[in-house]
Image 1 (cartoon, rainbow, N blue to C red):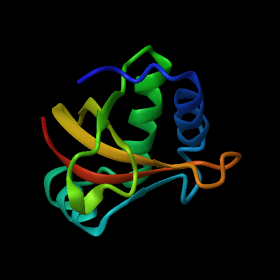
Image 2: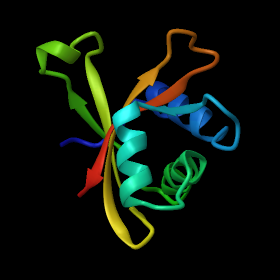
Image 3: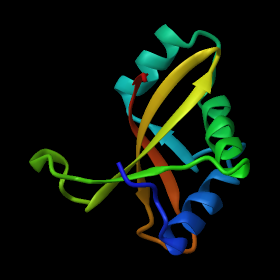
Image 4: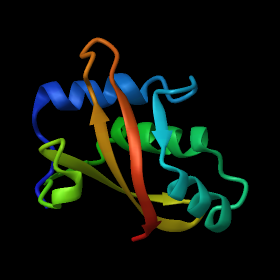
Length: 114
C-alpha cells in the first residue's frame, strides 16, 4: 500500500495522536478492545495511542488505503499502522475522523498480529 503523503491528512493525524494521553483522541471499536484485552494483556488504549504517536515522531509511515469494501465506504480511505507493541508486530487499521478539521480524532477499526 502507498504511504500517506498528503500534508493536510498527516497534520491531522499528528494533531490527534499528539493528544494520545487525553480521552477520545484515539478511540476503538468494541471488537478491537476485546482483541487488545485478550492478546495484549495490560496494554491500554492510551499505550497503543502513544505507540502510534511515537511511530510518527520517529518517521514511521502510515499506509493510505482506498476503501473498497461497500459496508465501509462512507470514507474514501482507511489508514494502516504496523507497529511493535509488547514484542509483537501489530497491524492497526484506522479511520481519521476529521468532521471538525480543528479537532480530529483517530478511530481504530481493526487490530491483529501483522
